[in-house]
Amino acid sequence: MRLIVNGETYETMKADTIQGLLDELGISSVKVAVEVNLNIIKKSDYSNYKLKDGDRIEIVNFVGGG
Amino acid sequence: MNDRLIIKGIEFKSRLWVGTGKYKDFEETRKAVEASGTDVVTVAVRRVNITDRKSENLLDYIDPEKYKILPNTAGCYTVEDALRYARLARESGISDLIKLEVIGDEKTLFPDTWGLLKATEVLVKEGFIVLPYTNDDPIMAKRLEDAGAAAVMPLGAPIGSGLGLRNPYNIKIILETVKVPVIVDAGVGTASDATIAMELGCDAVLINTGIAGAKDPISMAEAMKHAVIAGRLAFKAGRIPKKLYATASSPLEGMLL
Image (tube, rainbow over all chains, first blue to last red; front, side):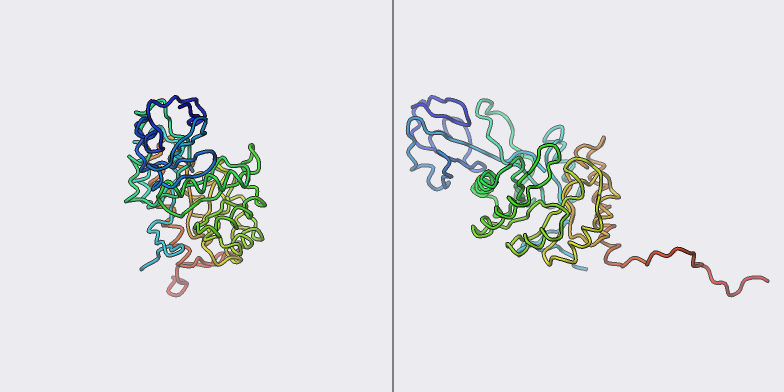
């Protein structure tokens, strides 16, 4: 499946959920927030939320800022 | 003496708040934050680096169990963007606190107060604890308070400028105008600037560049800590009125003829 993750094209290996994608990318779900096609997805839904070809995904975290 | 700052039931033990941007590395950030004695740090919301998975996370250095994390909406120029970043920040799961910024201009980074007010109204309704970064404008501060802002954060001077409090008189009027805490955000360049803000009666000061940009950020963090404590104590103590002429400190009685 081809996704746009943080602005870059990303071909999944076998992930079909948000949790699967995070696992594939090696990102812990604890300190991130995820948006799919501009909708914020609750952490509790990461395992159930089915991704579709062409979905635009944003994965954000906290960085240094003032 | 309990002189703690409380915002919406959250107790802050430090009146110096520290930004985490612009440090050389996370280790320097950690040391400066520690030296400042603060218990609240601001952070920004940005994309995770998905190509370099080994890149470290700020929160590995700044323990959210130990520090209150105050996310900002820095870099947002529209109401929609600010709302999006605020909601993402909350979903990251740390707290309902948001330092709301809606920036109006790239050169000055002055707030777009019209957008700020709109965004404040929406986020307050959504249950956020909104701390808006605003101008040193008492009327806007009042409008933000009326919209439900938990505090107001007027700028002392443009972000990163280090010019200090350019309009202390307006800050003083803001302090008389609103009941919510007033936290000077932006412009503090050195310790005396922070002290002046606190002597006016401000509830706290937020500093990023003033510390991170110093030659020795860790020493400056410590200086700011003392500056804020000194200013707060001086405010509470009540300064003497300014007079044009001298009043002798030593008694005239008992002088030799």
